Image (tube, rainbow, N blue to C red; front, top):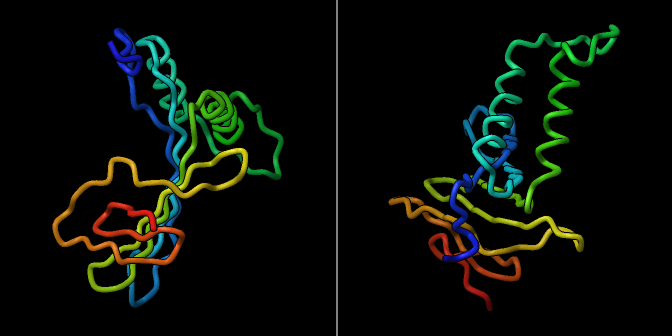
Length: 151
């Protein structure tokens, strides 16, 4: 049995941050940066703990930075604690950038965060979407319809 299949474990959990540029009058959405923390395989108990940590944030109040707040009862310190715990367990971190180039063309790139910095890599799990074109770019490689070809 391949190592990636671990009976009783949940695979593929990620903590994902999506940042988008503010829209302009001409374009609603034109740039996004996604940072993904890929978690290791989780047992059912670990996954339930992750779900409990996230859902527990909903009941907390936002704390005005000017006031002294109980860190266990306010949103920001608890969120920081949850993120520190779970992102610290990640197997690896990747970043994606999506840039709208007009018409129906989007430029898509993926990077791995490694000790030597950002390293461009092939797109993982790139969907094939009708009408989506990925233009060629000079960036050490070129992209052709969502697949990367090395020069």
